[in-house]
Amino acid sequence: MHGEATTSRFVVFGCADGVAIFEMARNDVVSRRLPYPASLPPGRLIRRMTGATGFTFVAGDFGLDGMVIVDPSAADGDFQFIALPARRMDFNLHPESGDRLFVIVEDGTLLGINPLTGTIEAQTRVTGRYAMDQSTVRPRIASIGPYVAVSDPRTGEVAILDATTLAERQRIKVEGVPSDLLAIGGDGVSH
Image (cartoon, rainbow, N blue to C red; front, side):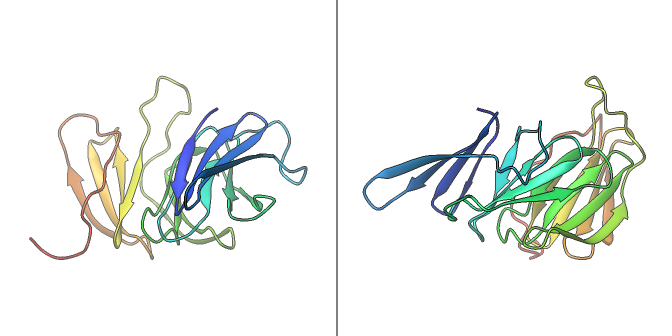
């Protein structure tokens, strides 16, 4: 097993040869396994997944330059492949609405993808190019409410962008090398 994600009443696990789906039924847990369909590019597998409370699908990485959307409520899993324009550094499915998949690729471009259609609806350059080797600390993404945040370890900054348009709202200079991000709150109310 590789990555796992939860969405509505489902928990989905990525496996080398498909996905394992566990459905939380009224008084029981129902499980099934679905192989990757022949329509997906061969030789790839899901290594990491994320889900949202607003929809019943999950998003997973699928090779270095691809993503896959899986609907665990469909009998066949309804796998949808999304080809990326470059190798992926990180991704994040908006955890509440699930209506936007954010992917940052190796040249520092953040993509706003509609996971229902697989189309790129917005994009902006957020960081410089990063090496894709294992030793490089690369940018990470977190989203909540109307915002998406992207860390830039090289510059020691976190960029805050509009989750719909990807317009930059602010850039926060932090100490050290920011990598992993955690978004909490995000309702837009000033405190």
